Image (cartoon, rainbow, N blue to C red; front, side, top):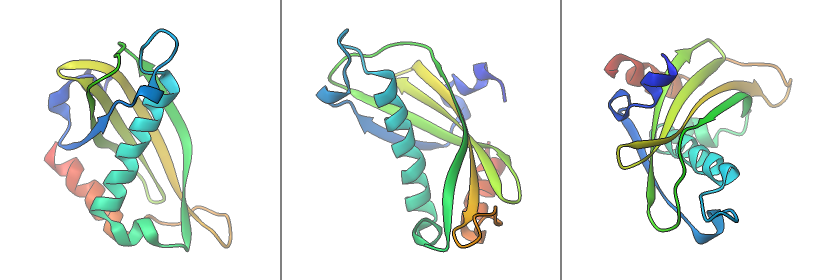
Length: 144
């Protein structure tokens, strides 16, 4: 999946809507880069909570970010919503990579690639992805 693909709305089937808050602005009255990353994170957590609540609440393992790569493509000011599309790009035994696009209408504000590893809390070692979450990711892969 190319960056151009991630910047197109039609490459996503999973969506979240994030409200821009006044506190998200920088001194240029644009949504701050760190705030935008937080909105993208909200969408990833919402996906996990909504589609695989049992895996999201299991205290035997943790979700550990390995890579977070963001390309900023545009800016947005106060008042409005940001639509965040999320899709799996790669699925491994203990890890997965999600692609995301943040949009103001049709205009892409940012794209991201995020690799996450499932880690056993007791051993600190990678552990296989929970069956329920793997099913969500596999289902999303098959629909795109």
